Image (cartoon, rainbow, N blue to C red; front, side):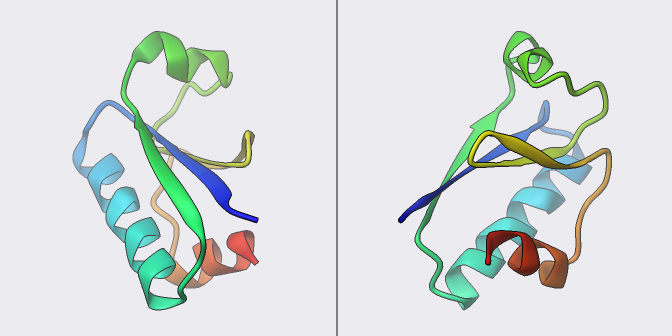
Length: 78
């Protein structure tokens, strides 16, 4: 089943880094997932996130306010 990943952030360098890490993990491990970038502040607030970037996997906020390691992202996706 395909995972739905959302990266919440306004496009800051940390948000871009998180996007890169997540894309790398998905392609390196052949994970079936879609990535959606959420930059609208009102949409971000719906997740009750005050610090970006944030990583949402299947509508669950897993990480907020920092860029995760590739290993951490892989663990969350498995």
